[in-house]
Amino acid sequence: MTRTNVVGICGSLREGSYTRQSLQIALTAAQAAGGDTDLLDLREWDLPVFDPDAEDAGDAAAFRERIREADSILLGTPVYHGSFSTPMKNALDYCGFDEFENKTVGLLCVAGGGFPVTALEHLRSVGRSLDCWVIPHQAALPRASSAFEDGQLVDEAMRDRVETLGREAVQYANIEPDPQSIESCENVGADD
Image (tube, rainbow, N blue to C red; front, side, top):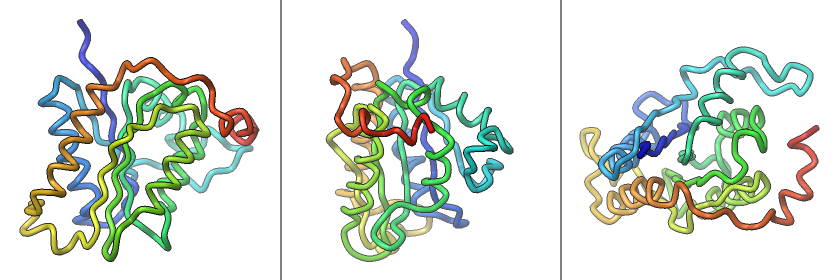
C-alpha cells in the first residue's frame, strides 16, 4: 500500500507567517494520519507573474510536477482585501487541469482581522473550476496574532480545525470524484 502524498502550498511571503505555521500544523497532522508531506513555500520558487506565452518561466515546470504528483493539496493563504493572496493566485495560474483535476484540495485561510470567509469561498470556486474535490471542512483562522504565542498555535479550537484539515487531506485523498462541474466546463482560461 502506498502512502498518500499531501502537498501544502503557502501563499504568504511574510517571514514568520501564521499561514506557513498553520500549514505546517496541518501537514504534521497529515503525516500522523499516514501521509507523506511536503510544504511548497512560494518564497522559495521562481514563479514570475504568469504570462501564457512563457508558461515554463522560472521554476514553473518543476512546480507543476510537484503538484501533479500530489494526491491531496492544501492551499494556505492570508487574506488580502477579502480574497486570497497574489502569490497564491500566480502559482495557481501556472497550473491547470493536469495538476488539479480529480485531486482532493483542502483550504486554510489566515486573517489579521475578522472571519476570512470570502477568501475561502474564492479558493473553493477556483477548486471547482479545476474539477477538484474540495474538502467540505475548511480551516479559518481569524485574528491570528492573538491565536499564536511564541510560534505556537495556542487557540485550541483553531488548532483542532487545522489538524482536522490535515487528517482529512489523507482520509479523502482517493475519494471518488464528482462529475465535471459547470464551473470547470466553462473554465476556458485553463486551456488558454
